Image (cartoon, rainbow, N blue to C red; front, side, top):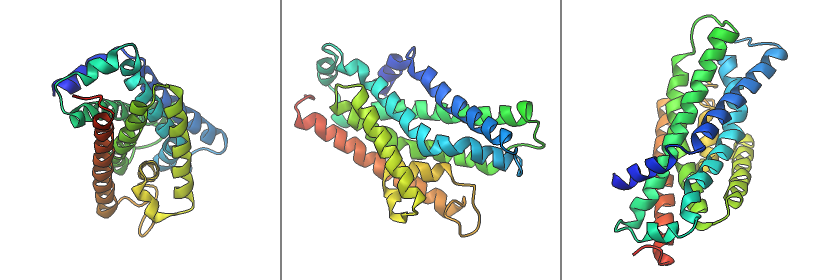
Length: 248
């Protein structure tokens, strides 16, 4: 817990929070306004949600998490901070987990901002009747869960690179690959973190046997895969620490 608190202190006044607020809000507003200009929301809140989360879930969320991971690791790659971190009497997997938890907190904040932006747009800007369907609140929770393995993967990349930009570029490419795999309906690609995240953001937009339907099975699959993929990425990061003798 102490390691995680230390990470929270590091990011307390970081620009990461500004980025985490801007990415979902700007993307949702731009997507919603574009949809309104091209014909409005035929299905009310459903249309608003689908339009708002479309580009965000397929691209901007993954890229945003990539930038946040580089920001979270930036301090460790400055001066002698890496050696100071390595000298801590803490297991490598705990160090790796603390970084992922910090990123997961930022991911939670991002999804909360998206949700609040959609509610604001629907009620205040577009005056839609009623409220956002309950299933989209559940989807938001699942999106946070599916964000964690991407946080872990990007954390692993940022740990290995002193470059701020390189992990972001790799994250952008990996996010695009995930979107393509989802678009061509490669079901097995859900074991790929970036594809799992994109898929989860689209849950609730389908029904019945549709792959994007929100069901107990689809929710369980998201949780199980997220836990397994996160564990693999954290262990890989911890192994990197130990292999390179960066941790005592």
